[in-house]
Image (tube, one colour):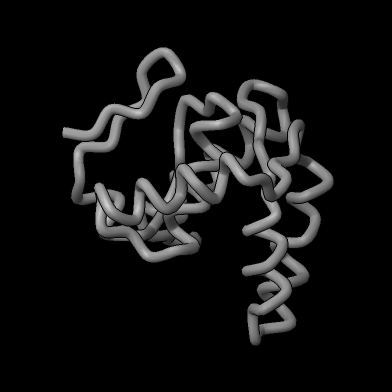
Length: 118
């Protein structure tokens, strides 16, 4: 029997739903950059196929960077985290899955494709 932490179970559940077409996945230039910079060859190779699984790709753009700057100020996010958030908002994502505590501890909600900060 394999026992997995709750986080891993959630990740496998979400990944399964993406593969079955229940959820769609948005990949971004920032995910490419972070995966390329990952020092672990094994982790890079595990993550790489998800780019091909993605239904949409978020390109770098002026509006992404401007919105990221706003989120850095309003939410006190680091640059890369703010870019992830800006990509999710631009692509009207219903969910942003993250392990970043600064995003998880704030009330960041998506409603009708608009970011609400409380």
